[in-house]
Image (tube, rainbow, N blue to C red; front, top):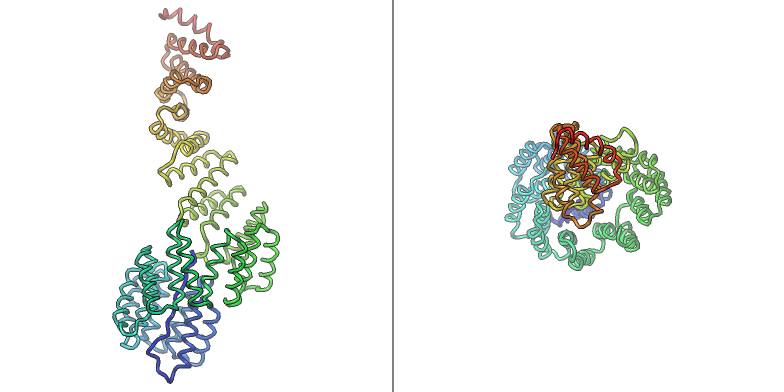
Length: 550
């Protein structure tokens, strides 16, 4: 899910004599909220060039590197903050920025120490901004602590009772949202709107909360999206989100919102990609490839990485596996790993399975897709598609393994899921796994002959010589169900196999010709034309007479 940024509010404590300078900084912050990173970078880089000791402008310049999900550059941010701190040591806002870099690079302990030092060094004038910076860092980073962020934002709110900063409430909403606490997130966003009714992001994020609540919520979340557009018609993220919302629902509406978004957003290769992707969703795959090539040619080295992914998906839809693999490989080389989604891993994994020798790589990618996706239905689809592909290739052992994973994911499995998992394990000679699955089948459906029959076949596989008689009990159940069944023709093949097993066990293992003859006779009653039984009839009769069977 694409992470959205926040609304930045004009500070009320800016001196009149610095209004022009402060407005430039606020413009840059607004561009960040609009996710116009190039525009924000242009403002902050000019301010830093004019005054390298401006800690506030430097902090926000670093944020243009860190908040851009598509082209996040923690190295550039780290170098910027380190250099600035060498010139102005112990500057709390810059230290908060450095703590964010540490957090994004996985150093949670170091980041926490840096945050606490920054808060301790902050003077009365900049305490609120430092607390917000620390909270933002913990909200935006995957390694961040939302509870810690909430604590710092509450401290900021206590210090801001007079001015009432709407940004604090928006950040509180973001922190609660990170904790998947939609109720408190919504309260915080509404508190922000009470302070500033023009806070478009608060409306937008409230809509996002309701959209996650499932079917029936569309009138509510669409109201908030419309409110966001009314509050600030120049707020690009809401138009982008509506483009993605309608992308697979209504391509014409998606195109309308995309055009509105592009009119407001910074010019970029990404916009070219978004337009080309509409050709893909319209199933115009050749056209999508042609336009993607044009986008790449125009952008050169700065081409949006997803353009290569778009080509890969298009070739895959056209059945061109070689080119699909080529462009998936290029896409994975160029894209930020954090931007690779479960569908990317799953599609690439399925593609790799078409190339011999890539099974382990393919399965690793499909496992990543299952782990990343939050929807159980999607996870099930990934597992089932993989199992079906292996079964189509007659690689039944692998198919059985993936069908078995479905049972581990969904405890509400039924006959169909148990059958495929058990049967493909049997076909793949994974007899013990198949047997354990059919025992579950037998417990759930004790009157179903198929579960006992296939369980018996697995037990035969485990006991390959028949010496242990492992399948006897299961075949006895097959015979018992067959004897009471009204559908004799359906159960007949299963019962015949059970009789043959019993005959072989009695004759070969128990050396009991009397019982063996009885089983052979049962076979002939059920099927008088059975060739093997007819062939055995006379020999067993002679042996039974010699043994003086009753």
